[in-house]
Amino acid sequence: MAFSEYADYDGLGLAELVAKKQVSAAELVEEAIGRIEKHNPKLNAVIFKTYDRARAAARAAPGNGQFAGVPFLLKDILGVQKGVPTRQGSSFVPPSPSPHDATITKRLTSAGLISLGKTNVPEFGLVPTTESALYGPCRNPWNLEHSSGGSSGGSGAAVGAGIVPLAHANDGGGSIRAPASANGLVGLKPTRGRSSLGPDLGDIMGGIVVEGVVSRSVRDTAAILDVIAGNEPGDPYWAPPKAKSYLDEAMTPPGKLRIGFATKDLYGRKLHAECIAAIEGSAKLCQSLGHNVEEASPPLPIETLAGAFMPVWASGLAMLIDGIGFLTGRTPHEADFQGLTWGLYQVGKQVTAAQYQMCWFQLQSAARQVAAWHETYDLWLNTTFASPPVRNGTFDFNEKDPEKGFAPIIEYLPFTAVQNATGQPAITLPLHWSALGLPVGVHFVARFGDETTLLRLAGQLEKARPWAGRHPPNWN
Image 1 (cartoon, rainbow, N blue to C red):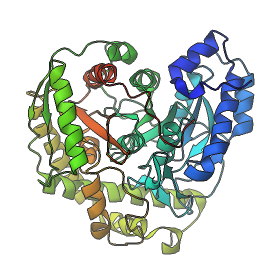
Image 2: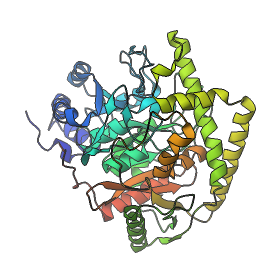
Image 3: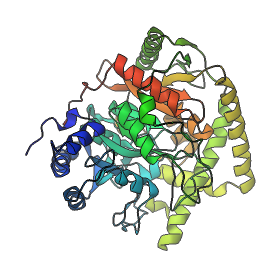
Image 4: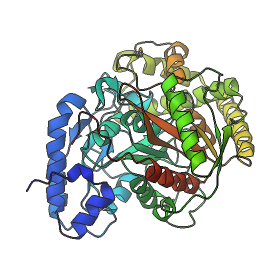
């Protein structure tokens, strides 16, 4: 039975149809598989398929989870599933099946979601565009010549094209928010410690990396946060507990908020004209909804912040590569990696313990400055990227000097890594499209632990300026 309206529904909408027996989980899985087979030759979003496994799960009782029977995809970074390889976009990682599920996988599947495979990523998730040498470039469904963002670029492209209503993602510098922005989606980076990285990890790089999804609706994003939030025994720390359901919060009016906005990056450089239009348009929309909006930004010492973030990030990569080498019995060689990865790995191996501790001293000092700013302002408004999505091939991943290689990347993605360093939650919303039809995500940042305010405002903005009817040329 064909279900032509499949992509008109978000995840909760599809789950409701399954619960009412208006469609079966097996039918939804076949619809999603058909769309992968239709779109993936162009998009290159899905790099490992688990169709037989998905069909078997759909034939079994879907259960009573909030997303029972709904197809989704796992990211090829941290989306660890028993019996399935996770290669992190790198040829250095062998295609060995995992012996167990990650906590995030258990929680998502316990909610009834049915995974169809793994999504494309850049090598080790280092950059905001998905173009690894192992998997090849992922393409944006809005324009196939352009980037789908990264590092959750395959997830973003798959959801953006209507293949699945939501997909697993994670964020260590903007990797949920960047693909959400590039593909016209909702992308929430939760607070540090909001969900567990178990059972294999306590944290990554001091909590810089967090788990989540990209989706097409605020309510799906909120409901997934209900599913994945919470610690498990052995976690090193966790975020302040939620007061009530995040899904309920997304349907609650936000009250009157004070919002500061920025049309320049942290170095004082003006953003692309389309980004300025997105910010100013969103600021006016917020003002029309009763919020106080004015130009203001946290007083961040950006040179210090950037100088501290890179050694933490590089040493985290070195730990990861050396850890994989230890587990697999392989010695890392330059030929195993793209140039930029190898260069960052070399930097990471030179970071001393004292330097690492000093970097965190500086990052935590910046976090206190941001927290003080948020005593006045509930939210900070900017855009996720400094321009609409770039074309694939824009950045040189053969450059081995990280300072040279990352300079244009940081200029392209200027704001998001700050929240990974400070631990704050942030959300990207599809509130603007460029004159060429490319999505420009609008980025809101809240105080530590305050996903509630983000979701309340996001729900209000989704009603005021709906985006559900906007579809890319490569759709459904």
